[in-house]
Image 1 (tube, rainbow, N blue to C red):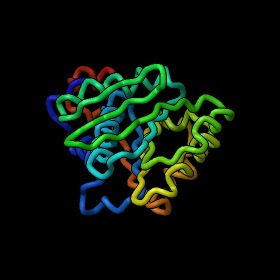
Image 2 (image 1 turned 120 degrees about the horizontal axis):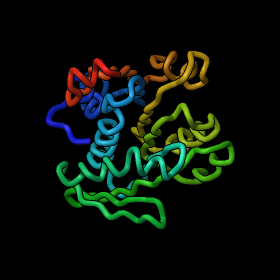
Image 3 (image 1 turned 135 degrees about the vertical axis):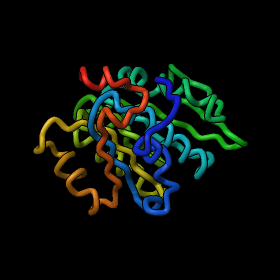
Image 4 (image 1 turned 90 degrees about the horizontal axis):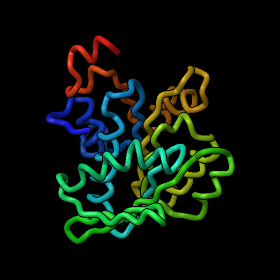
Length: 205
């Protein structure tokens, strides 16, 4: 997906960590409409934050499966990194990318949270931050293990992208409804928040 411009909500999803009102938040939660651009904007913001604030640190990009993560998040993100001033080396066989900028290098691992056994995949690693794409599709045990992996890193932040299918979903009740308690910024996206969609596309949705 290519953008000619960003909407105010998309810009906030990218740069909330620099905003005077939100930079002390521990997490961001973006939920709402598909095709609103929230996934790409969050991934751009996640990498920009990581590369600005850390050097020699590890991070995690998580999806329901590594295959879906690569399709929905990683491939669109890689298409923007050059324009953002980053260079990268992708290690497909080892499921990570190294991103560099101005002498800084950080590693971004890919994880899939398919089922309850997936929590073991992320155990033992220390992470400066985690982005969980479609977090509502992942088992709670995996998500909580990912969150735990960041607890020992100062100023670590969590990035959640989701579309909970009902108001009783555990992520909705434990994170979205408790965003203030979790010190998280919650942004609800509509298709109208994506300026590249035409009026006809919005009306047909």
